[in-house]
Image (cartoon, rainbow, N blue to C red; front, side, top):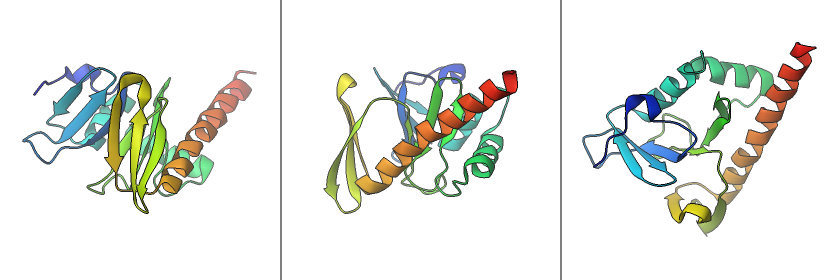
Length: 156
């Protein structure tokens, strides 16, 4: 079991993060090249990553809900170049945070989907439908576009 340095837990190499119940660790971080475990919860790790960009998880979620009117399973801009979305409510034990990397979905049943990261030969099965994942995935570029155009308008 490898433990990653705290300051680098959630970065551009992370594909997804989920709760780890099978170990004394609280979260499992799957990157492009390895798997790490942390004693911190998933939300604590995401909060730490947000704070590297001078904000908090709660502040970013509140802003997205206000600006984009996405009140459930809110997509999150963690920091520049790093965003993600939850498969369930973030407090749900089955919640997996999917970060912004190329992936594809394979339906395994009405409420079960396999997410493939072909480029890195990584996959994960999640307890949620393909349609919900597609909806969540589409919210991410909408969110990024909103903040990109907002920053552009504020500069002028």
